[in-house]
Length: 381
Image (cartoon, rainbow, N blue to C red):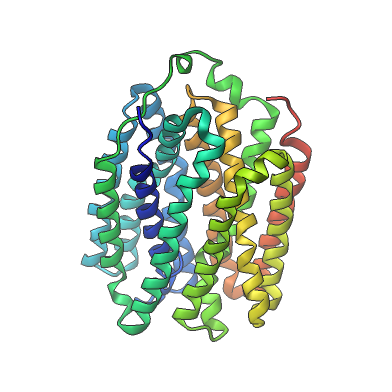
């Protein structure tokens, strides 16, 4: 079957365009409608917490039935419908209910689409994945720039409508994306528990959980932090966009890096640069040049780290357990790690101050570096 390059790329484009509308501006919207920092942290943690359960449930069903795209279409359609619930209330408990409901379905889609993409690519995964995935980064950057300008020119009150529209477009792309066919070899292999009990796999999940704990204050409060230091919404959007531009460049170059360096070396370098990034944001945010450099390091903290994760997951779990592997990756890293990162950043933001919250992020990245050095990439796969 011919590779459906543009349909796979289109899904990533609209998924990450939605994320580009959400990540930089949703905390500003929550602040706009009257929520305190602690409540913003809790609401963000609720959304992320569904990543602990939803991806594993949907991953099990997808691997069992093979109907991966059908489940993705259902989940993304329901997430668009449920997100519209934000139009009908603005008290804390209503926002909590809608957040849990829509994110339970939305958070299930990307891990399964990653698995579907890898099954479409099969042996081309190392070379072709980054060329498809970079369209997600392009969608993110266009959304950040366009929405930042729009919110400055009009009102942040339009944000729920924008996100609902993007989710709906994402659902339309999912409808026309074909189901991948698993190879005969995918029906054979070791059991899932044999994979999960390997020391290297345990270390891998711990590394990525710590990495997302470190990203917590960035994803939740970076825009608020910039506003506190007199950056406009347009400037905030530009800085977010710069980070994703660096990510795009990395996706374009990463196939060459994969030929030159081991996955272990790339992972350790990315973790070291990530630690440096949070320290720069903690202490040098008023200096535009340092703020720009910190965003360039997103190429390492997300770009390299994510590509390495996808390659390792494909090696660890194969085709047979790829849905479950992607789901566990989402649950441990973006789920547990993201939830803990959102909670500590929300609780400590006012108590310790923004700079100290980013220092905690640097410590979490340092811990990931230590675990990665000890446990990841030492086994022969």
